[in-house]
Structure formats: C-alpha cells, structure tokens
Amino acid sequence: MRKWLAALSVLCLSSAPAVAQSPCAAVSFESIDYTICTARAAKDEIRLFLNGRDGKPYGGFHGITKGLEPGKVLTFAMNAGMYHANLAPVGLYVEKSSEIGHLNLRSGPGNFHMRPNGVFYLDGKTAGVMEAERFGKSGIRPVYATQSGPMLVIDGKIHPKIRPSGTSAKFRNGVGVSGDGTVYFVISDETVTFHAIARLFRDRLKCANALYFDGTVSSLYAPTLGRDTDPFISLGPIVGVVAGKGRK
Picture 1 (cartoon, one colour):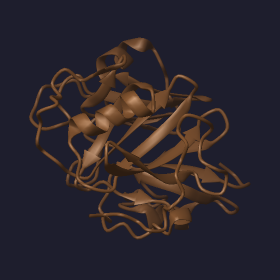
Picture 2: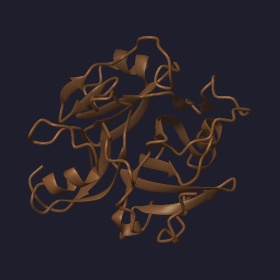
Picture 3: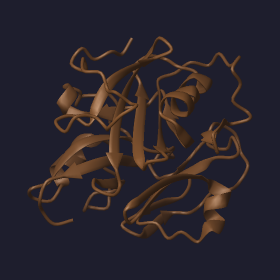
C-alpha cells in the first residue's frame, strides 16, 4: 500500500486550499487514502510539460526540475493524460498555445475511449474540465490543455458507464475544478475503483466536472511531503505548478 508517512497534515477541503508551505496533503475519504494537491489558476502558475529544449520527452519529473528557468521551482507535479509508447499524447495536447496533439474523438478500446472523455485546460487565469466534444465546439483557445478519459464527473453526475459495482482497483489520479475555481489534483495512495475516486471529486471536493488522468502509472512529485522519487520515469504529459521569480 503506497502511503507516505511524511504526509501527516490533513487538508480541510471545506475551507481554503492547503497551507502555503505545502500545496499537497493526505486525505482519507470513505476509508481510502489519497494525496490531494490544490492550485488556483488565478494566482498559481500551472503548466503542462511534455518535451524538453532538446525536443525529447521529459519522461519524468526530474528532467523538468533541471530544465526550469533560473529562480523557478516545481512545487508539485503529476502525470496528466494517456500517451503512446513513444510518450506522445493520445489526444489533444496544447503547451504555451501550441497544439502538439489533436483532439481525438475516435472510438476505440481502453479508458481513453470510454466516451465521453474530456479535456483539462488552462485559458489565461481560468482552469476547467470539459467533455471533449463540447470543448471542440466551445471555441476556447487554451494556453495549456490535455485530453484524457474517461470523464469521472459530468455536470455533477458520475459518468454513466462507471458503475458502483465495478471491481477494477488501481492506483489512479485525476483532476477536477470546483465552483470557486480551486483545481484539485488527486492521486490515490492505495488501489481504488473508478466509482470511488469519482465520488471523492463529486461529494467531497464538490467538482461538477472531473477527469481521469490514468491508472497504474499514476505518479506524484511533491517534495514538501518527501515524495519526489515516485518510481515511474516513462511518463508522457505532466502537469505541475511552478513558483518563484524568473522568465516564463
């Protein structure tokens, strides 16, 4: 069971985000342990990362930390969407307003294609999660965006294909945005079903829309919790929060 003893402080999710010195905290919901990191697009520098300056995928967190601008630090990060064997995104991927991967509305096998899937996007000082087809029609031109699937929560309801009786349990992670603009990045610290993590987003975090990022390879970089050596180093899209002064 992946539990990090360093994450002993408990995040009060009904009030403000986590205390300034740590944007991440351990939370128990329905007897399942999670780590939850919070950010707000209006004040935090949330970025997506895929390729380094050499054009090759970072593949993990430490390449990102080494490649940041002087004066910048990575406060936390996690994998952010499904990807091919060469680490290229399966669906839409936008970084610094440049579209690297295109919106994928095709049918197919696996979690990504469990329609509706969705998009996590950053548009200036606004963050959101939206069904992929709806996003494609929205006209939004995001600064950052990543597509994954399935949606976990859609307009306050759990995805219709995610059943309470489902028994597949994996380490899973995802993202949701609450009504007050708080972005919740969630990773389970033990194996969890789709329906269980969807309930966390809907019932505890009050996210009307939430998106599944991935399972099994789910990884978190959170140095304030002593958690900076998660084992997976072959990751595609990564989302993180950058702090400090320096060039963007």
